[in-house]
Length: 72
Image (cartoon, rainbow, N blue to C red; front, side):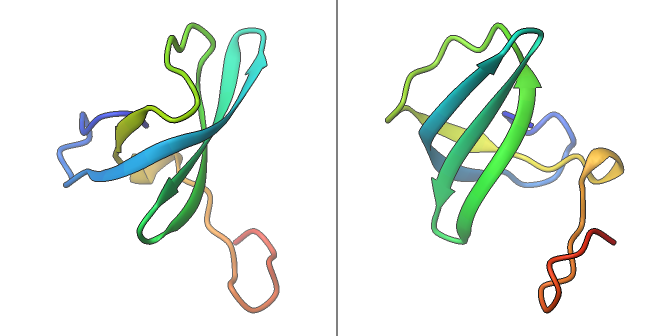
């Protein structure tokens, strides 16, 4: 999620790729802790290179096994 509406601390990221997919947008961001992909509303008005604050909605997050890459 963009922003920190979840109430959890946010962290800084930089937009590296924007994939407009109709009603959704897939946003790829680089942060100190890694590269993240986010599915956000399709009306995102940012641009590659923009700084964003990233937050995490634990109820809607996908988790993967780091050893196998399989979704948990």
